Length: 229
Image 1 (cartoon, helix red, strand yellow):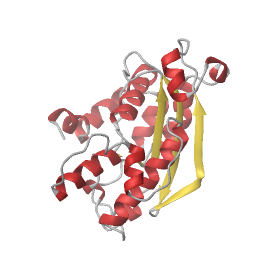
Image 2: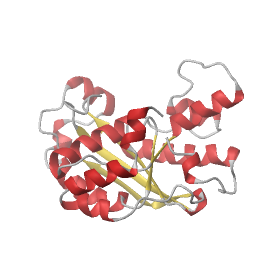
Image 3: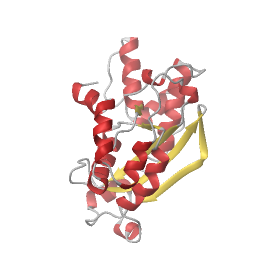
Image 4: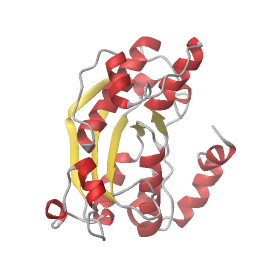
């Protein structure tokens, strides 16, 4: 973790942005984050994925959000949700080709501000799971800053980083493409899912996380701090 990330994830920074936050983001910060010394079996996680119009949170927009809860080291399929989000700009052809979401799909969808009113209470007090977390952290943080006055600080497990740590631990050479979500699922004998669907990718990340933990710590005794990004 770099110095900038350590500062962003620190308690003093959280206290600063909590004072700046308004609306549902302020309510989010009123709930304390999960303690790092808590055993992962006792932590509630929310696996989350976004589909966006591009990769730059400062100029691109969220067009769908999918999430599912992980409780007691098991995926709670009854908790899954998928929201389409209406961007301010028309959908570009290049992004629509990737996620197959078109203007007609989102014309009656809520904007990201409304979507965050629904999502933030679910995120509060939980730990986010994502694959390549800078996308989720960056886009959600930018949206929170725009609508509610402050960035989003949420404890996060990144399944890509967990996989990279495993590679380094075993002293194996790094193979291009090996850390892609579907390739990692294949390595853990998990079935393939449709890519670039926010809910499917959230479920895929949740299952991958549990598979990664089953190899390293099947009883869930590891402390949360040992798996955070």
